[in-house]
Length: 81
Image (tube, rainbow, N blue to C red; front, top):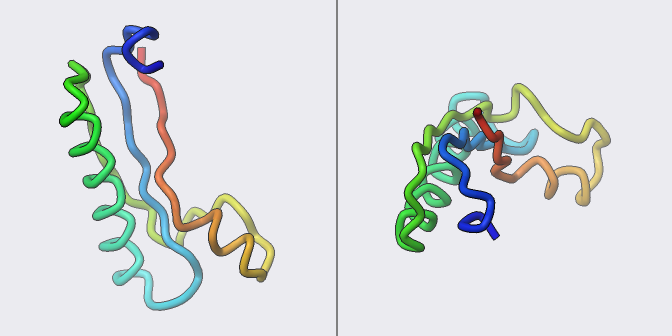
């Protein structure tokens, strides 16, 4: 589907959950984002892909539950024009 969209620029935002230190979660978020970038490259997509990590400092879900923590352990695509 990404090939069909003919996207040119994508920012991959890696995140972590509330467990561990901010520094630990920044590293995990960056690793997640870089793994997704590598996967996209293996697919042969010709995208300008940047990565960043927000660790646990910019959660997507604020509840203190296992489901919420799982949502925060993620990589989100931000399409850049």
